Image (cartoon, rainbow, N blue to C red):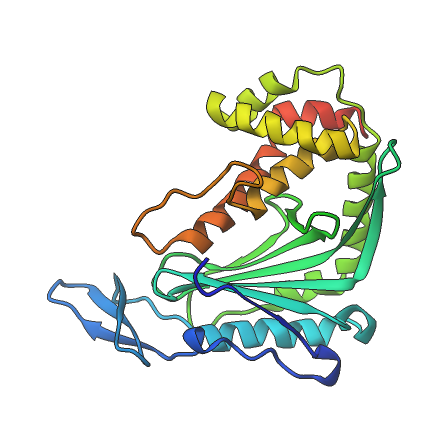
Length: 293
């Protein structure tokens, strides 16, 4: 995936993660021949990144991601920040970028009836686009260390800001301050899912309802069956199949990305995480979740 880059962080010494070179550029503009439109240009390479309205302004990737990290350091403890790691990815000629930060010191164990243990840790995902392709977004989630699946707990766990140069991350800071309580609530929910036997349900039919695709449902059911062999036939195993789909795109799960000329792999993988957040909010999934409440 273009631009993918994993590195350790040193937040405990107040050091901001270095922005990858391919993302560290000023955003410039140039008039087009169309009224009310202008080009977005990479100030380092002079590449044209897109066309936006005259009123569009945005911070550079460097300014946005640096501010997110500063807010994290202001609101999280030294213990929480210790050994943090960041994964960078980008697409659309680096106009769209994602910073995915894992906090391995904020953890909980999810234990199934089969005795399988999945350690999970807190996760923050920040998205930024300079070509009008997305708003500034910060998601709250977790990472499953057993299989390294990324977890986003729901569509509500996000902070959105319009893509302007005057962005404000105050709400993000407020949420960070309460992140441990939120993470503990998520962990308790996942533990309930791990204890919820879904063997009585026709999971394949439910997947057809959730995914709106017979072909995808069949592949997802196969993935769920693999997860169930390890974790048991529970809601946590089904959710783990979802997060596997959102984390990998190769022969490990059969959900390869289409081989196209478009530079959109990183964005397409993020959209899979959005799919998962939407699926767990569907009535079909919620009906199974009721048994876990």
